[in-house]
Length: 557
Ligand code: FAD
Image 1: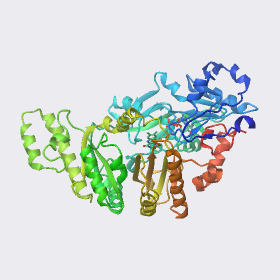
Image 2: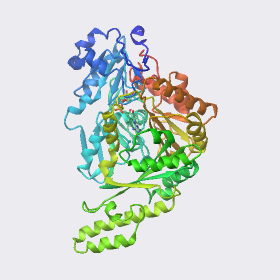
Image 3: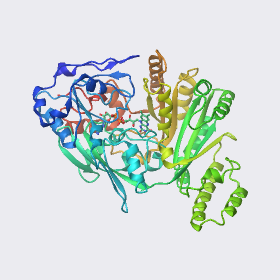
Image 4: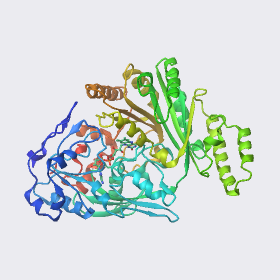
């Protein structure tokens, strides 16, 4: 077994090659699931890499299960075998560092379960929830819940990833400041442990497994169903971006927006981006949000700032209205300033319309006043407010549009040496100075840099996901793509320099979607949680079968 599992993960610079190792136990192919196992090179090659395109390693076989029971059968077999082999559930394979790979073992293609009917069920009662198969894409969960006028509260920026893939990490996005990460909104789970037991767990039942699996990086069990709390879904979204040239003002405003005082009456979603001047001048001339003239104005702002770095708050307000009138129409005279005169004219022109329409219109007006009041508290650069009015679904699925653009120019299926960090509020200005104005000075990163705050008290420390000790921390996503040969090495060096800076300056940041090559790194990452991680691993996956691609524990024993 040791030989079978000693196959190193292959770290690739510019092209992927795949390593195939020795065999699985022969009697595996006598199991009833054997007909669902594929060992042909095409199947194993498809499960050999991921969105990151940096790490590659082939499994021996890929399981295409029709039911959770078939997955349990495979895991039970491995756990009771004299030579246990690794098993990795794979959702969309949208990890960046080989986390869903199973070198020398079996990858479970969770998406195969999605072809079965009835894997998403909505309960629309007083406390509504959805039961979603772990393999479901968030986009499909959204579609199903919207049929009942409902939706989950917290969203990742991209919806073509699976429920269980994000719950294994945390699932963060612009709504998390108010509702916590996605894991904080889970009510119940069906899990297959590393011994092949099928367990339904919650805060009240087998709670140690429930808390372990949420944010547990696939180490303690395979999620086959998640019950997720829902809220009434809004119809429309007022989408606002505000530019800043000063980081202290930017973070002060972001923190105001996520504070309890502002959050009850404020934005429903708060994120932010860091824009480097070279990205604005040498990057795309327009984006699905910014027109080319917007980009030109932002580049002008960046060129005036000493560091060449500017910051953009992204916020949204949800609202409901009639299909015939959007906030853009109300705003039609001056898209940036609430103009009561024009609203009055619009209202008068509607006098002959149905009462219902007018009531709905009042909703729009209330939202506009709310927006005006929020903007009035912020200190963005004068005139640098950009707005859009879109359907709720269009907003949530916004990265799909960017994906289409990137695919069309061949920039989606490229290596993604991403680095995501949680930076404590108390050190975010030091991080900004050392990274954006230090390590990245003169750099030309292709991609997006996210930076937005979350409230630590919305994270449940019983869960395995690691947040921050400060009451507020920033998610910083260095989501860069390798455009040309040599970029991977260059970007990896920059990532290393960022991590070295954080270490040397004792910034106290944690990796999100973490990646460490040694167990020391993992122990530091989990900190006080490490002993619980080790104990629960011994309890729920004693043979260390599950999700070896995370490289937290050594090969199956
Ligand atoms: P995979 O890559 O297939 O698997 C990830 C890990 O989870 C692996 O270790 C795997 O073994 C394990 N796993 C998979 N299925 C199961 C299961 N059923 N049970 C237990 N473990 C399982 N993340 C955010 O939080 N917020 C964002 O806004 C966000 N935006 C993103 C945008 C893009 C374009 C991309 C590519 C990723 C983004 N992510 C974001 C990261 C994403 O949430 C994670 O990479 C996630 O793991 C991807 O889901 P997946 O289905 O592809 O998982």
